[in-house]
Length: 186
Image (cartoon, rainbow, N blue to C red; front, side, top):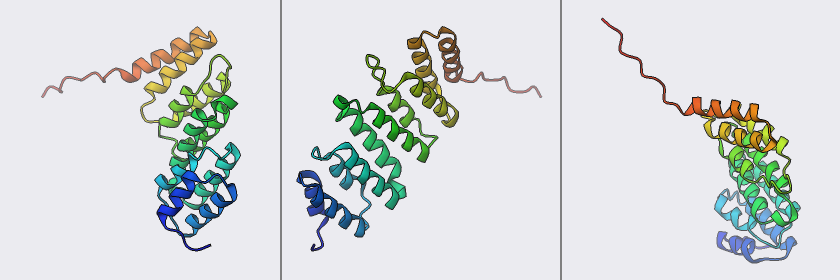
């Protein structure tokens, strides 16, 4: 295959319906060391690709360009959450939010976005899994106020008033500005 330009690669990622062609072009993009996340977003939005194919591309891309792995995982999680929701891929979305959190544990977005993908009518992903993931985030992020609020909400959904109040108090403690102390007397 002749060396493709970035525009040709982008066009293939966007328009091709042939997995083999997309795969060959993807391999060429990797060989050319193209590490532009915007280019690969075109690939991830290609509706002809199944979730397992997207996972294949995402995994290879994250391995080849570790500096892109957080963005790759967050992008795939959001795609699985939105595009494949009719197939109950909220659990797949959660898996990718967890991968993103493993790359940047101090970032609050993977935890909060995962909480947003909870589907209460179907209990997917299972609420206990979401709660455990949020607890992990509360220990990792610098300002966990919003995570505490989400934990309070999920415990409220579960009917666990004690834990709901506990996390609501923790959220309020985090959001209260520190009390200014009077200057010391000289």
